[in-house]
Amino acid sequence: MALRTVIPPPLEEPQLYTDLAFWWPLFSPPEEYVEEAEDLLGILRTAAEGPAETMLELGAGGGSLAFHLKTHFRLTLTDRAPEMVAVSRAVNPECEHRVGDMTSLRLGRTFDRVMVHDAIMYAADRDSARATVQTAVAHCRPGGAVVLIPDFVRETFEPVTESGGHDSPDGRGMRYLMWTWDPDPEDETFETAFAYLLREADGTVSMSQERHCFGLFRREDWLTWMREAGCPATTRRDPWNREVIIGVRESGGGG
Image (cartoon, rainbow, N blue to C red; front, side):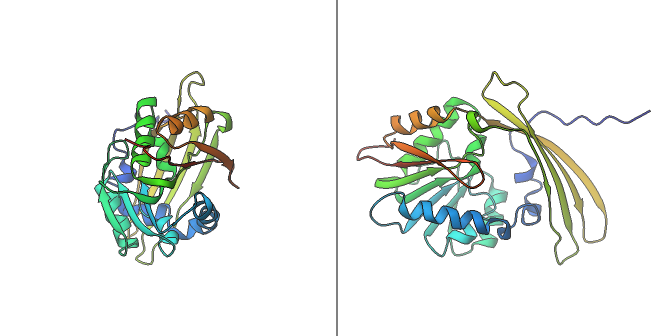
């Protein structure tokens, strides 16, 4: 009889960012972000007038993208998972790091640029998405820019399957499969199932799996939330068919 393995429902704290954070450099290392960082630099530099010297990244994860941006900005990197902050500190020791949730963090100061990369997808309901926008705008100086980069908006969503992984000089290795689909096109979420094969330095191989739930909102929803927060925005499509949302904070915007 065939064995049937059920992937459990999405977790509050995905193991990829907690128990498996140690494996992140083999899952998504800095060398995978060279082209994306180059494209983003053009956006970040020209998104608003005035200085573009300091930047806050909310949900910076393991810091692989920040690795390419830290020579251009003084970066402050935040994530709600302490394990991921530790990974990023090892990759980006020059940068300031803080543990904090992108829906509620308040650092008490502002930056020339604020960016939320694909971590914005974990805002899986409207209240969380709106709160994340408010956090980003609250940390942006008047006249500065907020850049949001969701993997999908409702208008651009497509099911996709991805795979990858890398080996480490210490003998460890990781391979993964990501399978993304929308179980209910009538709601505002989609899911990705992850399967990880983990090889220890001694050759032992184990497998882990989980599901992540992401928010899926219309382009106009994001533009509305940015406008309400005092940071009117426009969008452009990047080379990976993602909607890049670019807003300039008005005087008195944020909260």
